[in-house]
Every structure is written in structure tokens, then in C-alpha cells.
Image 1 (cartoon, rainbow, N blue to C red):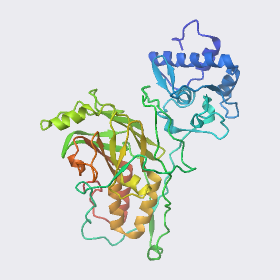
Image 2 (tube, rainbow, N blue to C red; image 1 turned 90 degrees about the vertical axis):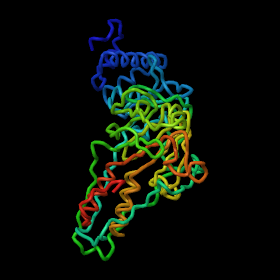
Image 3 (cartoon, one colour; image 1 turned 180 degrees about the vertical axis):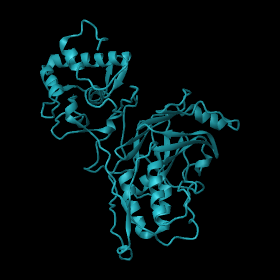
Image 4 (cartoon, one colour; image 1 turned 60 degrees about the vertical axis):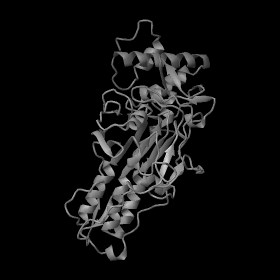
Length: 425
């Protein structure tokens, strides 16, 4: 706390004393400015005592602490913008908070951010962290009769998929999480400049694990549990039909794939640095338009893709397509500033439990659900000149490691050969 200036008001010092996490010098100064900014606003409305009460008692049984909502919903503190409830929840509760996707307002909060009122509550104890649901283990017969060789895996690389546009006329339902607000605060404080975000989340399909069929009811069943891997997904980058560069392994719950040239780190996969001697003019032109690319979130057992680029991205996610009743190979266009839920662990768990009853081949076919393809700038499908993903100039392929490893364990338990289950096996 030695970096605090001698003129810092006592109330600011007291509030900073409750700050969570360790910050470096620059971050420490920014936190102080964020608290000073809030104190200045609350002095005018007489809410300072309530803020101190909430922070010191760490109780949700305190009043809403509100500040005026800005036009884009974000708060600027010393050249950095972020959502106000995220800023103060990070400061006083969860220093590892990455995104608004990780927060849910409590029912008692009358000015929650998602209510879009003129005032927004920044009481950090009026928000809860979204917890990752525990997936039930899949009950698998100790051994089942398996085919002599692996069945052919359905592959959509060379088929001509259908197309759909965001948001495709899907009516929101009452049980949907709130539409994600404009902008977000990433770990490094960068924010989205888009004015509108739309979520295409229309609820989950009516899936539930089926009881074992009578033929299996007397068998010795083994529970196979889901384990969270160190790297939740692996990302490969392609130009036309050629893979370029090394595979990126994502460990952070929020990361971007962009067209810039900074060396990649745990939160960024930068495509601008990658070289390819076979690169043609069309690929070169497309690469210039990737820009800020796509942000991928893995939060609460769900994967979201948010288009940060000024050009649309195009996504082929069999899990998402099943949720909306589309053909599994459908390609969905996501315009700039919009985000789409592209995978849900609970839906996959229910499908896996059902497929076990249908035998080895049904389980093996779920492998394709764990692969998501995404192209930048240029789309593909029946409505486009490019009809296969390998015809698009720049695209990525995501392998979801947790579901793939779970499938591998289930197939092994069913008595499969000792071949690793992957998108290319």
C-alpha cells in the first residue's frame, strides 16, 4: 500500500484495504483511481456509508449501490474502459474475473446491470460467480461387443453445408440468461468497441440421460467421469487446405484469435506472425481483414464465440446446430459485435449418456461434436461461392479436449481398441 499518495482520502485508504489479490505498481495505481472515481460519485448521492458497510461486512443484505449508466454501459477509469460491476467485483471479490459472462446478479438486486436501468448497481455482494456445473458420470457396461474396425466418422469438410444467419429468427425464452451487454473487461483491461451484443442463446434442447436399456440393466456398469483438462481446447490455423503454424493450446477461460503480430501468449493466438510460402493474394487480403478476430470464452461449462472483427465470422458447430434443430453441418454467420454459444458440456453429457445405450458406433460418432470450425471474413456453404471450409482463405479448427478425452475413456470402457479418440482417428 506504500504506493498510495499521501493525499489519498481516509475512506479510499480503508476501501483499498479490502482489495483482493496482489497487483504490480501500475495496477495498484489504477485500482486506487477506480476507487477514487467511485467514491466521488457516491459522495454526491450519500451512498458511501452503504458501500463501506457492504465491503466490510461482505454481506448481500445491503442496499444497491448505484452509479449512472453510461451510453454504452461502460465505465472509463484512466484510459481503460470496462463494465462497472465487473471492475468492482474484480477489485473487492474475484481478482481472476475475466468477463461479464462469469457474473450473475442476485434476485434481491434492484439495479442489476442486465436490467438496463438508468442506474446500475456496483455492490460486489449483489453478484454471484457463475459456477461450472458438475457433470454426472456416464454409466458404461464393462464390455460391449464392438465392430472389427472403427466405423467411418461423419466428416463435413468436403460436404456442402446449409447456411443460416444470426440470429435466424429464434425467439428468446424466459429462462435465457440476460443478453450480454456491450463491451467487456478482459484481464488486461481491453474492451470491445462495438455498440451492440446479441446472444443467440435460445435455451437447451430437451435432453436428459436415458436409463440403461433392459439389455444392459443386469450388466456390470462402470461410472466414467468427466475431468477438466489443463488445456480446454486446441486450435489449428489453416489457409485453404494447408495447416499453418503450430497448434495453440488454450488454458485461459478467455482468449482471442486475432490477425495481429504480437507473439502469442496464453490469452492470444496471433495469426499475423505466421508465414506460409504458398500464400496467395486472396489469402493475404483476407488476413488483413481479420483484425481483432474472435474472442473465445469457456465459462460455466459453456463455450462462447464473440466476433470482435469488423468482418463477420462463420461457425460450424454440430453441438450448437443440434440445439437449434439445424442440420449438423450448418454454418452460422456471426456479425461483428455478436456472440454465439457454440458448445455446452451439459448437453453433450446428456447426448453421451443416451448414445451409450445405442452402442459403440453411436458414441464414436459424437467425436465430430467436439470439433468446431470457424472461418474469418469469407463464409462457405450452399449460399456461398466457396462450398467447403477448405476453400476459405483463413479458418481455424477447435478441438475441445475435455469432451474428447471423456469420449476416449467411455470408448475404452466399452472395449474399444487402444486407439486414441480424436478428430482425425
